[in-house]
Length: 132
Image (cartoon, rainbow, N blue to C red; front, side):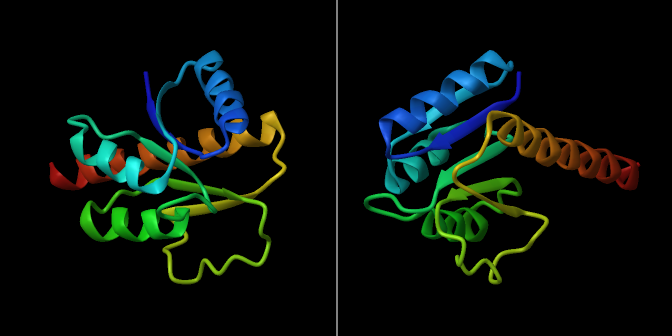
């Protein structure tokens, strides 16, 4: 079962996303703000395959969390979901950090997650072949 760290301060959105993810076979770890997400991530022995972040949250924004995850842990799969279409994402590598706008349909949400995780699996397979 693939694990996803879901970071969203709005309890209704977080609950909806969690239910969708669980119904589609994903394990979900939840955080309500950016600081909590970083604490949880640090403690996890088995890191999640994907981190889904809201952009605007108390304590640390999704962008601040993303910067710290990339700097400290080199986490490779981050999906930021925001209602702000003018968000500046140029400082993040496109293959690592994806951006989707709210509102997002269930189909688009799941499709984006599957796409990110397929690319991750493909890259891991290539790395294994190069090591041999």
